[in-house]
Length: 127
Image 1 (cartoon, rainbow, N blue to C red):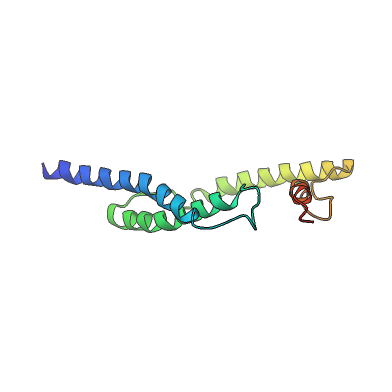
Image 2 (cartoon, rainbow, N blue to C red):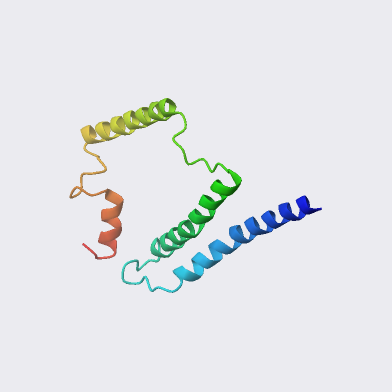
């Protein structure tokens, strides 16, 4: 019976953490006015919400890693496989950018900034 109550306690604790932390992070993010830095409301609230979630959950993850020996997957894993896919990704993106720049359609050709960022700022009259 004691073993079942301990497991039930852990389940309730994890449930409370998984349901409560996003709500607390949302309440924290609601405390600020983002109109000056994010007039469209596109990124500031959700960025603060996720930063607060991370700050609240990292200590819980650290404690669970130390006490229950949980593995959350924050390791380098197989370095050779990671470097292999990183190299492939870098080659593909580099080839894409080189081919676009040869066509005169590079994503960095407007004032050295990304096109979509330039467009968004220009449409908001911030440039």
